[in-house]
Image (cartoon, rainbow, N blue to C red; front, top):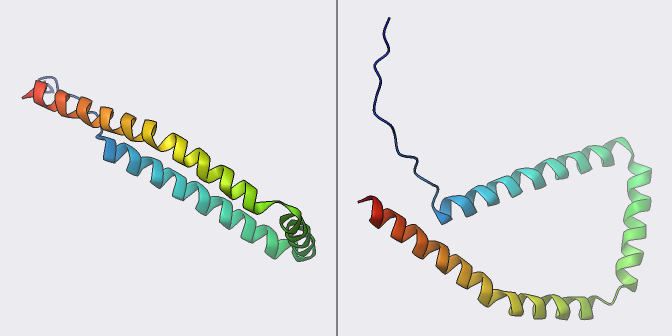
Length: 102
């Protein structure tokens, strides 16, 4: 039995969109597992779940949510240009790599 050897195959790196999609898929799977674990815990320990929910509601009531929201928006506004630049640079690099292979 001899195996025929096929020439080396070129590894095609994932595109930026495929990488982002893979991250979203991984995140969605992680959140789904955590949600199911939380749901199971609530079913198994309902009294504890009610006490935790009441404590969380009390803490949320006491938190300065408006200032936290404003701080998050300022941070998002500050980080958006560098993130867009990085994504654009990755797309240019991907484009140049595909042109070099042709």
